[in-house]
Length: 237
Image (cartoon, rainbow, N blue to C red; front, side, top):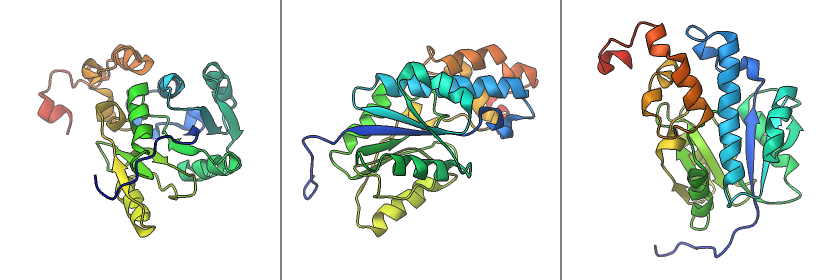
């Protein structure tokens, strides 16, 4: 593509994973999952995300920002560095704290949410490799216009604004600074687990080896809610 600078190599790439207290995760699923089930779901998803980040040869380090001591133990097998989320003011605040902690290293950054358990190491690697062509790279969420990956050649390029419709906001923020945005789409990165209908499709989850897919299949939420006999067009409304 004319006019685009392709980098032969990138600086070290660090992944930032913001993690709220696990027992507070996934409140929107409270009507169909117990507190203990939501806790196990949050643990499963985080484990899958960290495992695939750890396997990616494109990523030099993983920084987890959390106020939950249980996360420290869970993240240890993946060589993650843990810093305290001292403000507990949400995802964007946690990401900013992570960016500040990495300032002295000045690495390239990949922000990955803790609830994209079907994203593979190849998915994450594709996002990082796209930074060679564009200074900012995004992966959109399939369901709510959110952002399921934000990568930057430097941590100061775009302020994180995760949440519904954040994909468009991140693009607008980059555009205001004159920065080209690359977009990487994949099934795994597009599918987070945030709403009740995200729990029903476990038979179709492509990454069947994931801890999350196994857990969701065991829950069999559709049968529990009496939805398994309904046509798909009704079930997922």
